[in-house]
Image (cartoon, rainbow, N blue to C red; front, side):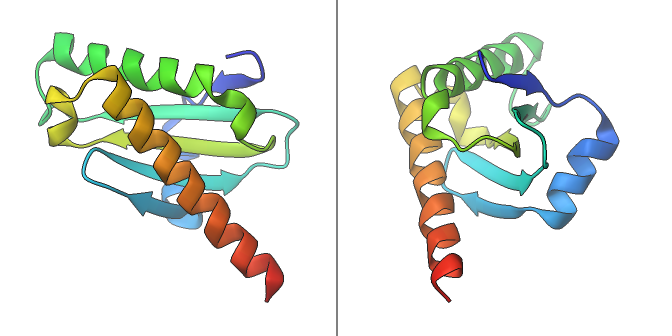
Length: 117
């Protein structure tokens, strides 16, 4: 993640949940909030409902790698939180990547519509 850092503090996660915009599909939920910094901060959340620590860590790595390879598609200055749903446990890397890109496209489409108003 060349242009990004990790989002680590619980208070930062809460701020993104409360003030950010969200988009969801069957595998992932994406929250996005502007952070007024010159870099993105990525937070990944995988609940114990999804599976044991091995499964959770595997999903976390898949999401992080999907983001890393497509990082240039995201604007700078965003706090991004990705939450894995239970169905993501059985998903392949390509399905996770497709889901992340779909949610990012939804975010930008809605943001563009708001700018036009």
